[in-house]
Structure formats: C-alpha cells, structure tokens
Image (cartoon, rainbow, N blue to C red; front, side, top):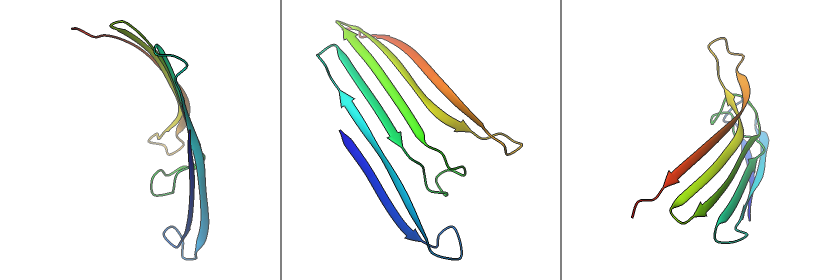
Length: 101
C-alpha cells in the first residue's frame, strides 16, 4: 500500500504564488505465489511535467505457472496531437513470456 501527497507553493508557472495539491496511491496484492495485482492512481501532474491537467491510472494483473507468465496491463493516458487538442485514450496490453532454463 502506498500513498502520495504533494503540496507546492510556487511562482514557477505564474507571476503570483499559487498552491498546488497532488495526491494518489497504489496497492499491490499477492493472493498467492501464482497471482499478483497492482493498481496506481495519481490525481494530476505539475504543469511542467505534462501540459494538460489529468488524472493517471494504471492497472496490472499477472499470473505465473511454472515457466509461463501471462500479464494484462491497462490504463488511461493523454496523447498530444499536432492541432493541440490531444486525445484521451484507454490502453490495454496482453503479454506472454516463457522462461528458458
């Protein structure tokens, strides 16, 4: 279990001081030796880290069976476009790996 809390009182982005608050958390769960689950969330990023205010979400589930590993990963992300509008998108990834030896 992880918790994130961040406070900034800064003039970094404007001519006047402003208060910025960021928060989030993560949970990692291992119900047994074969399964693991992970979820991570962050409320936003500072303006110099990304140019559009957004929340970030990432989820991972994987299982190990002998030399075989199956994983599913997903999340929500923002992709900039040349016209400046950008696109919010959900993504998923499925993977399989085999350990030799």
